[in-house]
Image (cartoon, rainbow, N blue to C red):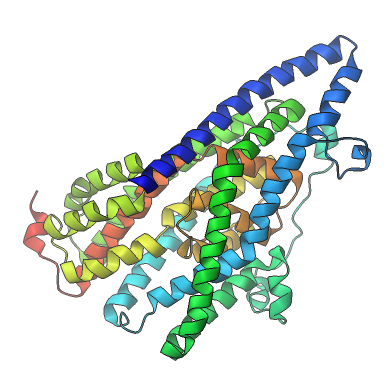
Length: 449
């Protein structure tokens, strides 16, 4: 209860920060138009210098930029945690998945099923995001001076990603957030090798667990204590400087994420069950509806686990033994809803910043998202925090990209309700499929309406 109350407090502070940011931002926007139209530009120059000035720019040498500094410290804090976060969380996730005591046909089928749902979710969500982008609904009409700062992603053969995943120098990969793909691969290799070596690596595993605890504590503090203040500063600064251009595409991002997640829930899981088991998917849809609603209401996969296990065992006829492995494992590594959200968010952030996202870039984004989502740590707004990993891996690090990211981080609560529904029902679907393939599914219980 304490953990849930803590999470609710974070959400409340985030919502309050968003509302306050929009209110103050609109007031400053009106003030700016009033003083500029009234020929009192000097007043606005003082306000801009004190609160909003980019102090790293050439013309910011005499500014203070209080809101800019707070936003930058928050973003740099997230950036600082990227490499240790990916390395520890993903390597430990691989250890958990491939524990020798859990290896075997059940673990293999579980991992393959989760991977299949990941790939399908990433592909469909990427396609939907690309469609929205092509329709121009993510576009932002940037001021001339800001449009000049927009960058384009250099063309490259996507196959070069295969070469770049193995770093020539492991320390150089760890020293740059632009080589996240290499860090992901190193983490996976490290986790699997530690599993193979068994007890010999227990000291290293404890070191990684302790480092992971330190990183999570830092991120908890950053998001819980600094996050709401930083969100307020970034949204206020965005509206005061860039106007209301970001409001429409942000709302489009929220609606797209919610619609895509809900459509995926009622399509890929019933289709997966039908194709792999030949069972009627209608009973599954009806019986798992309450799981999705409970997850959306609590916004916690951990809180939903008891209900999920009860429903799978008593109503869907799944094996209790298999479910005791599949469902807790899914709570840890099955975040395909997070991957779907990542695909839409990355497309929105890049497009709103004037960067053209191509299908080949979305393929790389999907690969990165699947790898990082499997190791997503149990921290508040973890899914949106990991978007920063994708941005770093794709080179989306301009100030305009940071504006889009701050809006995604601030406005994620409602989309998150749909995302977590996709996650937990995916766990139940996998439990049904694995139980059936192992000959341990009670078909009579499953079909009973």
